[in-house]
Length: 365
Ligand code: HEC
Image (cartoon, rainbow, N blue to C red; front, side, top):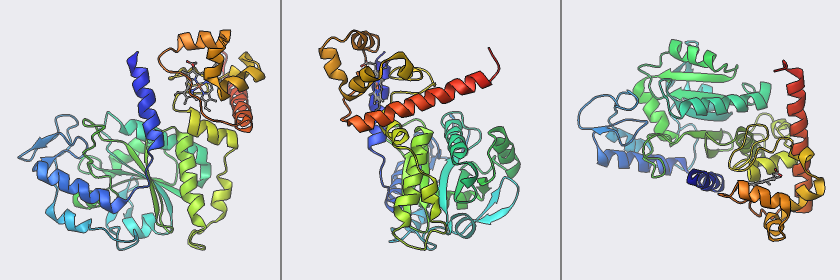
């Protein structure tokens, strides 16, 4: 039961700590750390080291030798422009050759993950998250925003393998799965700061990272790929929107930001509540909130969301019962205003209605 608490804390940390990431700095550091520790290291499991060539006992990927050369290549540069990103050739899942900078990055807004199809830990989740984002963004993927999943196991992930992987996940157009020369991919992952990060929070697996970039604006943001997809989509919106104005004309389609608008309730829910609640996804750290707007009176809900601790103090019977049931974590006092809470309740109500409509529309169970 402790695990809930731990989960809550971790999620909190994830949400609070989303860093504006300095790509050049971190990749440089990682490279140095890996070099001093071992000769050959698994790109996904940094603790898997060997003095000789071989494969990782956890995932079977070829162990890699951090190249000395890589170090100078990641020397900090002021701008992440054409001279920062290598213009190496990669191959798509359809066997098409593309240049990393010219074809994939230049002038674009991108979401990038590094995956390998044999991965059993986090990649399926990363891919699933991208899939959910793709659904939310609809046909903007491939027009305004480009998704790239780059294999870090190019020996095994041939275009054919990637193609069937993409099909398995029903990846839509505008989402490329890329493979290429091992050295080139390593260089890319270093430049993106996604190279085998020995992460103190996650010693065993790779920390699944989704990199969002607005290339013309030079803005990059690193996120946990395991975050709630609507939250990630909002982040993508920020990368797109807030910075497109800074370099007028740099972003081809200024209407993009406007079209990616979220309601206030949705935004608040995604940033303040998803760490603990789902709507229709089952109990998480707190209860599933589907139907809560129908189960409780609006006045009660408003008070509870605004001042949960007060209701416990007053020994409100519902609050007491919930408190008993979810005793590991308390619904936090989130400093929301009356109007915030009104938007949140409207959002929960709309989500519940949408769920009900979907259930009614589907086959009766
Ligand atoms: C840190 C985790 C956490 C966060 C963040 C959180 N909640 Fe909760 N919430 C809980 C827990 C746990 C409960 C169960 C009651 C308790 O133990 O206090 C709860 C209960 C509730 C309830 C009552 C459910 C019912 O059956 O009546 C509502 C409504 C609610 N939360 C809404 C929200 C909203 C809206 C947000 C975001 C603005 C939010 N919560 C953020 C943990 C959280």
